[in-house]
Image (cartoon, rainbow, N blue to C red; front, side, top):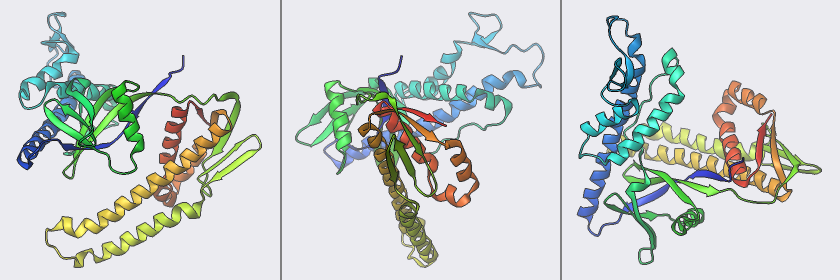
Length: 365
């Protein structure tokens, strides 16, 4: 049976909801500590998981060594003091007791164990290296740590507590979709599955995962849309006699190449910039151009994919076939200019997401 719901991730900025600067500073220190402990815990988790699966291949161990990864109470050959799934969690809770909520450790352990199992054979064959985690990694938590969520009329913000830390949202302009999602969360129309907190450049971000119902557009199964992602036109689509070309090569690349050229000119002047606060000050202008390019690409690809799905909905097409998807992918991979500038795979990802949300079956041919 086809699923009637889908999962959606959003990025929402947060601020600490406390009256004084000193209190806000202390609360932020706690969040930084949780992020640091999550980083250490993540590295320990993948290291322990790898050792556990590889211990039988350590040839320098004697032949009589037992290596069965089960509880010794349940099996005489077992080498663990508890179950396999609980072994690493117990190690984490003992090491970081009192420094970070155990709920965060439990969700982090569950998430990384799942990812590890997916790549199990690659690790075993030596074709993949272990995950490496950065200082600004996001740490997960469950709904148990998400409390007292409500909209505050005085503050004009959605407020909640992350365990004991009061936080409020900062949505800014053009965030109607996020407002709508959070409002539906309050009245129970959408479900909050899990969340993450990420701290980037001193800013706090909430990454919630919502389970939302798919849209119902009364589409007709017999109507099929055929689309292709080409080099000259980002998207060309036809449904019966109706045809639509979305965007063109010059329109997409003109602005992006202009931003890259401006960034190159700025880079040539970086050595002559005033130092002041050092490297960050010198590279500030470069980062601005990088952000501008990234934002431009995301906006354009969202626009292209939305127009495609809207065209399918207008014509009641229940199926969308992407023609020559593999061939185009190979061309982009071979051409370095296209690989750098075309964002083919990102466009394909956005089409898949929007088609799933609209209830349209996507087929790649």
